[in-house]
Length: 384
Image (cartoon, rainbow, N blue to C red; front, side, top):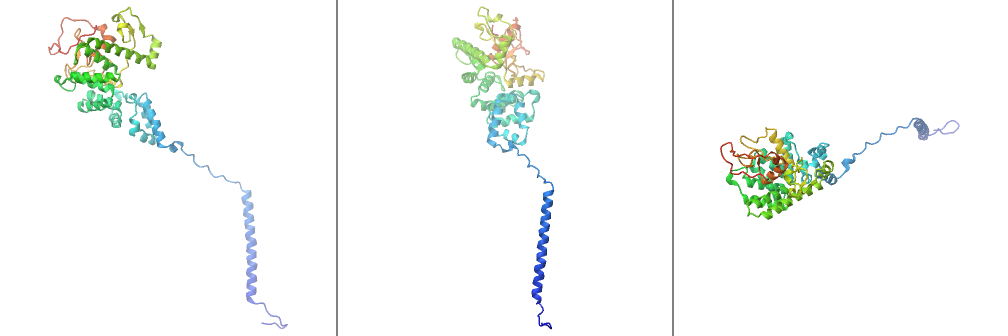
């Protein structure tokens, strides 16, 4: 379309394009200003630091094999049950890993030194779990408790036999005492030859009481052909081993150093030696402290002591303070034929108790009888 001067009007498309380009330019300028304004505000505002990540637990990062190895060392070196149980109560992971068979199988004898007043079903389950894991000390401890304290004869004897098969010397000796006395059965259930064989096996493994019992059996011809010379040699060897065990232990060394219990006087007969110690190697005048009782022996002594020191009507306890065995039937144990006031489960307990205290109290009597009028066929002579 032309004007009067002959000029043409601008096309609409051209106008629209120029307007859109103009608006776009204005929009870009405004956007640049906004970005510049935002940058200025960001620079002027204080910078906020994000919170630090939570610290990672280093114990959770330890592999299970390392934790199990540490727990195994701890269970084998524990000096009391609380040393091990307190670790298991620390956290759930230690409780789970501490109760696996690998850890329980290496637990030490002192880990099972449970007090009689603390006995419970949970303690019973713990000992059973350790026994199932292959721990021979747990099998022996639980077997003795079941046999004598809980009067579960069959289960207790099987647990002791399980430990004896693994060459556990205390279990072998305990089974020997059961065979000598016919414990858990009648008098006709005694098997003297089996008792001597079990004693010999335990003595070969270094058990001092078994070696002493074997020496008395050889001297007296009890369950074996009499051989006084060989029996005497076993008795001297048992005393020498006990002396070496006391001297090698830290507790014994400290006691001897502080109290001077070890004496040497070859000119004074052993029957005139007095004191709180147990005179061993008496032929040579040597006096050492009494040996420490086994934890299960202390448990049984506390168990029956809380019940009036009587395992039942007409039943007696072994008079040796370090034993703790009770009778399972009337007149099962032998008693001193001189005074008749003490009784023992074995010749080893009789010899130890004589040297420890009974030689001071034993007084001969002309005649004494049992409660039922029986003269006592199983009496033993006190060592003099």
